[in-house]
Amino acid sequence: MDDTEIEVRDLKAKDLRMMLKLFSKLSPQAKNGLATLLEGASKSGEPDLLALGTSMFQILSELTDDLYSWLSEMSGINVGDLDEMPIGTPIQILKQILSKPEVKDFFESAALKDTS
Image (cartoon, rainbow, N blue to C red; front, side, top):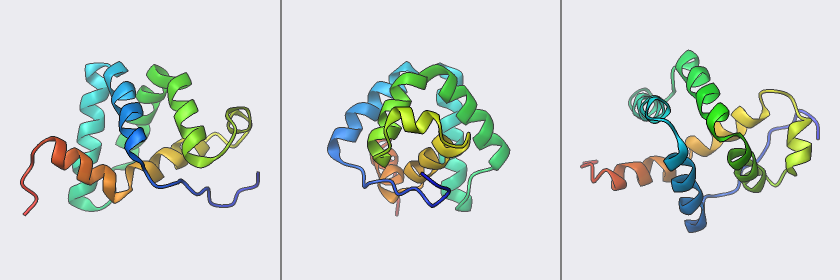
């Protein structure tokens, strides 16, 4: 696969199960970092790139196998092929997933946050 933009499929109800599984495996430090990133992105429209990178390394180190399987399924890229792609590819896929409006909607509704 070349350097073309990777397309991530729309999230489905089954992805909730995977997100919950992944989230439950995160350390408290990684959970706090992810929550801060999501909050910052929703306020500014874009996450702080340094914070994003730091959080992504923390998350990847804790969830590598499960996360790669999910990223593979979300992008339609075989796990073996994903391993051979440029180093930024998993982050690119994850950023696309996190930027989907349904992710923000899910976290806001899960927190029972008033969005009006």
